[in-house]
Length: 307
Ligand code: ADP
Ligand code: KDG
Image 1 (tube, protein in one colour):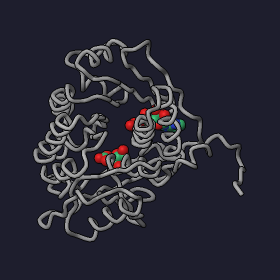
Image 2 (image 1 turned 90 degrees about the horizontal axis):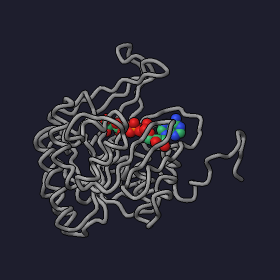
Image 3 (image 1 turned 180 degrees about the horizontal axis):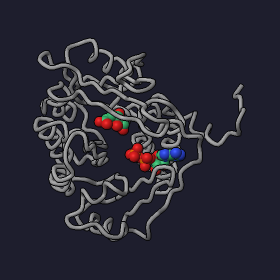
C-alpha cells in the first residue's frame, strides 16, 4: 500500500508524508537490509501509487518480478492519523484495491522460478477479501509441495474483519504453519477452544504441528515455545521508543534472518529483539530497519557519534 502520514487530527487537513506500508513488505525490506534474498509477491494498481510501492521495494533490494499490476483496480491506501501522543488511528482504503485480489498465478511463478526456503504470510492478507484469502491459501499449499518453511504472523486487524472470521481462517491454516508469531491477545484466535495459560495454549498449537510459537509483548519482549525444554523468554532491548508501528514486522524479519543463518532459538530471538527495538526507536513502518553492520549500534550511550 501507499501510506500517508499526517501530523495531527486528519479532519483539520494539513500536510501528509507519502511512503509505503504493509506488514509483508516491511518484513521483506527488513530481511533484504540484513542481506537476504527476498521475493515479495502481491498486487498493485497500474498507477503511480503502485509504481511507488514497487520502486521502493526494488530500491531496498527486494525482488518484485512476481508482483502484478492490475489495470482494473487502484493501489491500496492507508492513512496514519496521530491523534494523541500515545494513539495513532489507521484509516484503510483497501476495499476493491489491487492488493485485495492478488492472482494465484503470481505466487505460482515465484515458487516455480526459485522455491523459497521460507514463506512468510500475515493474517492481514486473508482479511482483505475472498480472492486474497484464496491466493494466500494457495501459497500455503505450494509451500507444502516445495517443502518451504511457513511463518505466519497473526497480525489481527479488527478494522478489516471480525475475530470470528479471523479464527475460522487462521485455525484452518495452522496445520500448514511451522512458525507462528502472535501477540498475547491474538493467540485465542488460533486456538481450537477457549484460551487459558499461554504455555498450555502454546502446547496445544505445538500438538497441531506448529513447530515454534512466538508470543510478542511489546516493550516486555517475547516468549518462544518449541516443545523442547521450557519457554524461552527474550527481554526487549531498551530503547527510546518513538513509534511502535512496524516493531512486530521488524521482529519477524530479525527472527527469520537468524533462522536462515542457522541460528538456534536464543540467537533467533536475540536478533528479533534487536530489529524490533530498531523499529520502535525509528519513525515509519520500515525506514529504521538495520543493515547487518548496523545491528551493533543499539545500546550506544546518548550522544554517541560514529566517526
Ligand atoms: P506488534 O507490533 O506485532 O504488536 P510488539 O509490539 O509485541 O509487536 O513488538 C514486537 C517486538 O518488538 C517486541 O517483542 C520487542 O522485542 C520489540 N519492541 C516493541 N516495542 C518495543 C519497545 N518500546 N522497546 C524495545 N523493543 C520493542
Ligand atoms: O505492521 C505494520 C502494518 O500494520 C502497517 O504497515 C499496515 O499492513 C498494515 C495493516 O494492514 O495494518
